[in-house]
Length: 429
Image (cartoon, rainbow, N blue to C red; front, side, top):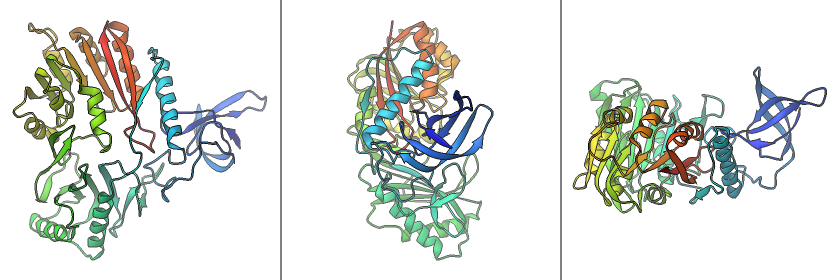
């Protein structure tokens, strides 16, 4: 069938409609790897009652913004969705998606959505790879759980692929007492330190330790510090063996942050400093709360300008690093969930916070948390979001009651992908 692509939608596709026999607009069709304004021929890959998903057969009329994807795996690998678009066009697509998502939820969008960008290649400090039984590695496929073996990844810090290849070479020497099926790699800005977690089926401790020691000797020696650990694949992974330091020191916004295995840290190593400055710098006062604090990326900066900073985090993988990163500052870590902390502090006798910084996971805040925030009524809030849909839902709840939006900034934390980060500055009305 012949389709004309109308607009981008969140998730990386573009929207088209099938024309009915009477010429009226018919079912919505979502088409990946296309751009608005293009005309294509396509076939239905998945047909639902109210919409369909299609795959392109031929591009009949290409957008002027279309470019040749630099990665040979693009289109098959599931990691990227926009490599076929010139980078300024990617920003425009994301800005349009963000604005429409907020408007659809009834949120008043500022006349201008600002953007924060950096170099769009080689930015990822963390990747997660799947390994085949033969020891080759790759990412999961687009619309598939199959492993797409890769030879390059132009959005990742180069050291991560070099180390993955060394692991693959070591596995290729086989046989081994340990079967690796996934690996997570994390590096610092300068690519001098790396955390490497390998996931496997349960293995006897003595065999796992000997095997890990042998692997460590085979890894690149030009990397000053590589921390290796072997974990099982359970929902709460158990460490089977480890070698090297348990964490790395990651310098950001001129502060040294301890980051442990599995702890959350922003993925774009080239944008972290500007991102943190946007969310947490140039503010001062008596008290600031950092909700969903992670290892304290925002809290450490806030502690330089506030008399008291409370950093709330519930993830065990982040808590020890958070406490360490706040030593000697005005900040303190609180081990609890954000909603429980807000419940306890809703009717406090002491003056409330001057500023609340929120950086929730993809699920956003939800009804109870937004209700509690409205009740507490801090003069200023900064909401950092990685999902425009849940952001729009939460902003509607906050702005309908107590807050107005001062500024919205689209932070392109994930170039070449459909993901987008947003920083929203709110002030109590």
